[in-house]
Image 1 (cartoon, rainbow, N blue to C red):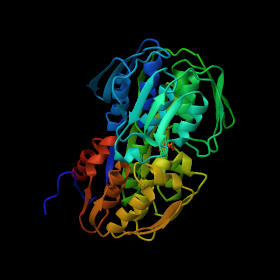
Image 2: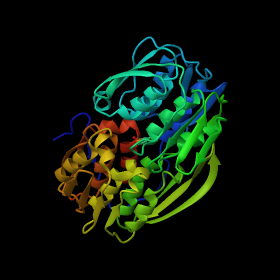
Image 3: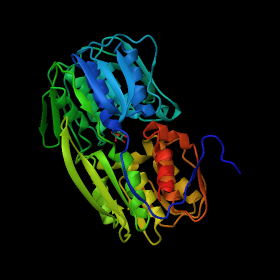
Image 4: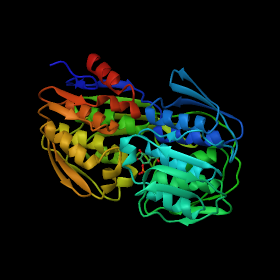
Length: 436
Ligand code: S3P
C-alpha cells in the first residue's frame, strides 16, 4: 500500500559510516531571537533553526513590532533582528501564535508580563493542553495580571511595572527559570530563581553574551533589573537534542560510526553522552570553540557491546528531551533494557511522551512497561508495523531510528511533525541509507 500523506517509510540500515551536521540549537535560537529583540542595535544570528518552533518565536516578535528579516544561509537561517531596547515592544494587534512551542509561550510570557499592555498568547491543540501555572504564578507575583482557563493556554497577559521576586519553582524547568529571569531583567530590584535541580543554562549564558550581568550562587541564579543589552553577531551551534538521534543510530547498528560536527557541548545538555556510554556506545568529544559563551565541538560515536542501562531521576532534568532517542536505542538491540524513573514531566511535553512512546513502540512489536513517572523498554529489534507519532517531533524521530533496525518495514504516521525541530530529518536518514 502506498504511504499516505504525512507518513514516512523508514529505510532499513545495516551499517552506517557518516559525518554530518545537525540544525541549529532550538533553545539557543529562541533565546538569541528574544534577547536580540530586547537589545539596543542590530543582531545577526546565523544557523538559526528553521524549525516551526523557532519560526513561531520570530513571528511573535514581529507582532510586537520588532523588525526581523530572514535569509537562507549555508547553516540554516540567517536572521537579522533590529532590537527595540528594553521595554520597547509595541502592543500586538492580534493574539500571538506560539504554534507547538512551549518555549516560545513560556519565555514570551516573561516578556509580555513586563510590557504595559495586553498580550494574548495561544498555540496549537498540543500547546493548549500544556501546564502554564508554573509561569503564571511567579509572573503574577511580580505584578502582571494573567488570565487562563485551568492554567492552560491561551494566556491573556496584562503587563505592568514589575517588581523583583525570589522564586523557588517545584519543578526543575529551564523554561520557568528563563521566563522569570527575562521578566526580572525588566523588574525593579534583583530577581532570583532557586532551582530544585540544575537545568540547561542557555539563558544565563545568552544574557551574559548580550552584556547583562548574571549572578550565579549554587542553585540560585539572579539578575538585576534595568540592565541594557547590546546586539550580537552569533553563529548558533547544532542542537545536541537533534544529534542524539544519530548517536542512537550509530550506537544501535553494529559496526557503525558517526561524527557530528559543530554541535553544542554545553555541560547542561551533554549528560546524555554519559548514558550512551553506559549503554555500551563508544563516544569521544572534542571541544573546538567557545561562541557567545557556549562550548562547541564534535561528537564521534561508534557502536559497542550493547548493555542494559538506566536513567536515574537525578539525571532526568538534564536530558529530558533525549529520552525518546535513548528508548529508540534500547528498542533496536536484542537483550537490552532501558529503565527511566522520575520523569513524569515527560507526560506534559508536546504529547504525553510516556503513554505515546509506549503505544508507538508496542505497535512496532517492542515490549514497554509504563509507570506513572517513566517506563521500561526491552530491546527487540522491532518487528515492524505502522506507528503514530502523535504529532510529536521527537517521537517521530525516535520511532524512525528504531525502525531502521526492524525486521519488516516501519511506517510513521504524522512524520511531518519533525518540522518542529528538524525539518530535514527524513532527508538525512534517506541520505544515510543511500550512502552505505
Ligand atoms: C527547553 C526546556 C525544556 C525542554 C524544551 C526546551 C528550553 O523544557 O523540554 O524542549 O529551551 O528551555 P522544560 O523547561 O519545561 O523542562
